[in-house]
Length: 524
Image 1 (tube, rainbow, N blue to C red):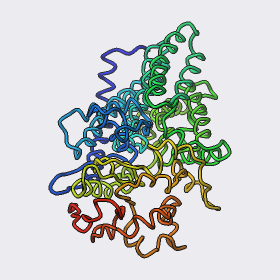
Image 2: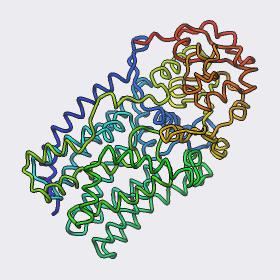
Image 3: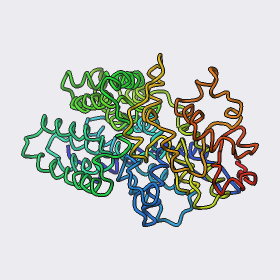
């Protein structure tokens, strides 16, 4: 079943209700995840994405893809997405609006994703009304909407994977549609390699080798060139974030299983339908190969720090399409019932699920803007959440959790507290390597935490009652000898900071004499 312009137009028309629903919730999220400071509405992305935005801004300035000028450490995970961010920073936009531009880009990608998902549904022989339901379900499922409104590269990955699946769903060999997008896939994130391998295995099960192997090999060439550049520029084969989050297989297996089971509990009908389609060799049953390799990859890395299924999300639209195709074949349901079933396949949607709490973004944006207004441009800042504060302050920065620190990333992971559940283990992925004393050897001018000053001043965070609110890296900072001697006696005191964040100044910094005159922008 080939694709014509008329088919794509039909898919676009059928996707319109789903995209309208997505736009409604996306606009709600965008407005709720912004703050007006001194009359300027400021937007942000998830904290991890704001780290990449800092690299992108430096690249757009001609300083190279670096965290600080002169430091070559790859603290971002998606080269192609960071390059897209760099293009945004070439536009005449202020720092308050660059995140909004990235959200609009992701909204456009969602529109393309819905068209691709409905085209996959057409190739799986879903009727028009069923495809309308599929579009609405795919548009509102949290593993599409969350990553889109928070500015993640996951939306681009999902689009590329879905287009590749459209190529695989063709009864005739379609290697260009399968491996053309896959060439970009490997430039977005190197850990999409299992998805690329799945495409190869599925192609091998459906087509003669000579019809697809040359295209697949050609698709690997851009990724090989990227690795050569990475080695030459950064001196590493992988991004620094991968070294930071590396665990032994014994440590990753348990949380990886829990991560996948949590996903399966959110999408039980879709997971069962894919398994059934594979067992019966029904249309779309080949998707089980991708699901299986993805499961193996998740077990190897141990899951993810985020509450939703970022590493499995690229498969979700295709899983929904295969589930509907399987249901239609098994029960011969009418279009209306299939449309209702499509909505039941997705877990319950609530707009509140679109908000990110990673690094207390609203407070961190306010602090970043305040630092930009109150300090000398050359003053440096050490941070725990490393996204919003370094970006909006635009100051030299020290990441105490090591995303942009080669030495920290290669430390041995700290032991988790005895009795920690899988939820806590997942929440600490990437946050178990730190050495506060080592990070503070450069004597940054400021140290910022995302916890209220009153909790630090009272000592509550170090008490047995407060330890649940203070991760190990926070307790390590608050008990570090360098911090206690050189920073703790010199807080920036302000009524807003009392309840939201805490800022400490180095005793020898020029900022010590200014710390009494800080003005925090009044948030609205």
